[in-house]
Image (cartoon, rainbow, N blue to C red; front, side, top):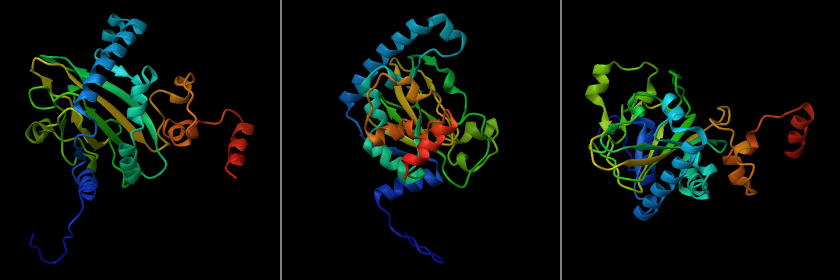
Length: 264
């Protein structure tokens, strides 16, 4: 590409991914898991969702607008824990955020056939935080388990909206919303402050996706994972850090000082 007054350097594919995230707010990572693995995750999600419906009650979930949301499936099936600790994703998050980060949440969205999900409202994944920051505080890794397109209600984005604290007008968003086309096994990486929403599923198939939000440790987890996962024997230091064990608040003065002592 020709230019004048400045130099344009050719970048790598990885560099382009980071530039997409920085400027547009999102990028697509192709075929991180196989389509067969994606299908297996769909079946596992249905199983966990059924379990959560039994635990809380279907009517109660409907009352609080939680239908077809599977919260923290990693606490139910170890396969989801492995997904949250995917090495490729963690390397990307570290490159964007830095070495100190934790898993803020892992939630799955089931967009049923011929229906509109309640997450079809425009939102940021740090909700009600309408400001911008010079550093990235939070990154999403959204695993597409079924086809994401206009018919299935694929995720829509307002490109570069993470760069402005002001929420655009409805007319602007209607005009500039972009539906990202993705296949089973693809992962959408995006800045959590990017405005997005689920589309309306007008197809005859359910759409499944698993969302991971990784944040700097100053942002508390949606669910206290170290307490939620007490039954899990997680000894790996990296895994414990990602799951938030390293960043637990001290319960006493001595506990605080012992943690400092252990760093020596």
